[in-house]
Every structure is written in C-alpha cells, then in structure tokens.
Image (cartoon, rainbow, N blue to C red; front, side, top):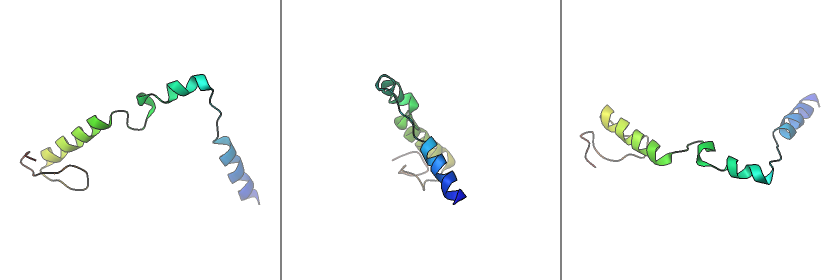
Amino acid sequence: MKLLGVLFIIFISGCANVHQIDRGVLSKNIMQLDPHPEESVFRNEVHSFRESSIGGNSAVGGGCGCN
C-alpha cells in the first residue's frame, strides 16, 4: 500500500500547469531534445565516413566517402 502511495505522489508531482504565455518559450527549437536534427544527421554521416564503417544508423554509402 505504501508503494502505491509513493508511486501516486511521484506521478502527481510530474504534472505541471504551464501558463499560455510560457508555452511559446517552451516550444522553441532550443528546448527540444535535438534542437538541430539536420546537423545531427550530417555529423553522424561524417563520423561514419571517417571511421570507414557504416551501419547501425541512417547513413548510406561506402567508406570511401561516396554515396
């Protein structure tokens, strides 16, 4: 019963009311988990070419740098 109470308190404390004026700030790109997804894809591709091995990510091509 105590475990259920603790889980309930943790669940309730995770909720927050955000004022409408603050929602614009929270929705900016800098607040996202990956604020520059294009740059991340490019860096992963360059890293794959430098390591001369590709696999496990979205980059396609050979180790020579050609697609």
